[in-house]
Length: 134
Image 1 (tube, rainbow, N blue to C red):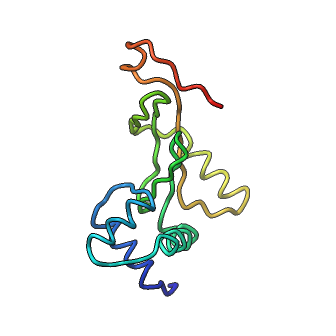
Image 2 (image 1 turned 90 degrees about the vertical axis):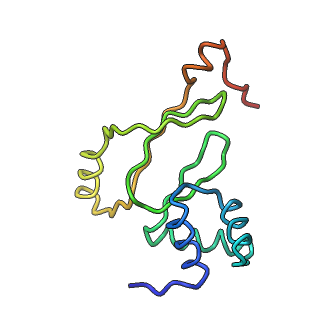
């Protein structure tokens, strides 16, 4: 087992305690609130190390913001490009593909994400369209 830094342990404990996905900035603020001061750069470095160890997964939203959580299960979402709401979906059409890839490429998969982007029911009803991309 790899030895983790005190900062990495604090991040893991925070993610276990809150049991939700957080941005690095949100983790930084939560750690400060609990008097576990840590620089934002250290939060990012710790998250990167934990990700490479297969303990933390990252999900990038349509806005470009990254959310981190413990690797517990695969994540699948429908994400509205207009309001940003994400709807978790339980179905996973790629589990068999994941197993095939692990075998055919001798590649250790820690987790996978699957994200569909479009308009939620409410935004469709309001006649909204996604923001224009520059």
